[in-house]
Length: 533
Image 1 (cartoon, rainbow, N blue to C red):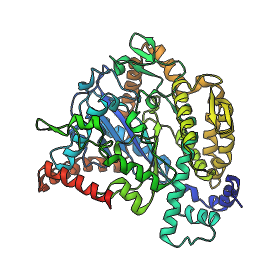
Image 2 (cartoon, rainbow, N blue to C red):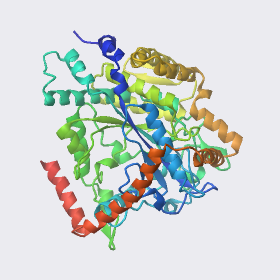
Image 3 (tube, rainbow, N blue to C red):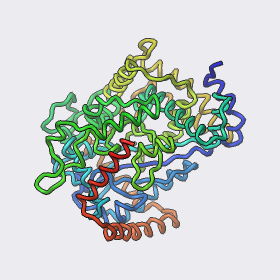
């Protein structure tokens, strides 16, 4: 007999009441551009007082020297995770001088491609490789696309959950067999991912906060945007231009048709991309006039180049490719990548947002999840495009395998289906935090003017331009964070890590035994061998 989400919730309720879901773990990765007080991209290097961007575990850079990235450890206590993120901001502000952290996903005023300084990681081979990889992104996609910021939400379910679900779905299988259990865990995370791709348009509608951009982002390029003011372009019903064709989208990658129907299919498609040359990248060359332009000429230089709104993940060991780790040890957690920075919140995300995301992801796991045929893939892409570009349009029609449905009707249906999941998550405590999150966001369905994207547009109109709006938010947040109290133990830890990370980088540089040419050749040979094996 086929089990339904209602069956799974009923089955899990007793263990949920004993606190099972308080063991959900989350980690946050939050990016933010360093900008000057006048709203321009900072041209200075990563502040030395923040340590080495190569080796610091919590404070690093993403694409650019000016693109800070704050990383929290995985924790089962959401409030502690958010406090850790706040303390990272507050500690960093002690060392930023006049610079502020841009609060929006879409960047500040830019002065062309070359105004975005590529991140530097020192002279070690591993540091040089990170910088060369970013040069490859510059040659392939341009630096402007890489100046976009977002929030990555890492999510893993409690270990105790999996044997129970395995017994419910496959009572004949042995949950004490580690290999059997890990295969089941990977299978279930991919089921979650498939449902996420079906329904993630709802997250983009509710939390999208990038309906407008500074004109400099598309200077000299064709675009579909309207003029809001002399410095700002927008779409009147857009939710997340960051997730649109203007943002992290790429025609070469979209042709890959990455398949999430199984771990093997996913790994095989990525493996094909990192070993298949692409003629336009071959034309760029790898090393030209003594300078590296990219790591190789393949569709993807490395697996991290693949852009997706969600990824299956496993912590890698030294020298291990992400797909190797997945193949050898299975999926450990998932990384949600479609969340815009909330410009009204100093750390980019609120606790109710996180509670809603937890509810949504558990729903995606517990709901039945059929494999996705090609025609449904196309349907999902079209729904995504409609939501990011005109998601607040009243009566917007979205596609389902059963036919079209209005965005409002489908949203209410999903909220109704999320309700028992929120109740399950709240069943071990006396505070109905997940249900409160649903109640807080449900009004946004029929009142799109309450969504972050609509509120951003209102703020832009009041301020005079996108840049003025974001700068005002940045300055207000900086004023609070510069004097915000920091957990004393964390402050001491951050200071110690800043110093020790610089020593670690120096040790790596001293330990190199071969030049970078040899190092890169060895790395690519090992990658190809792993792929062939």
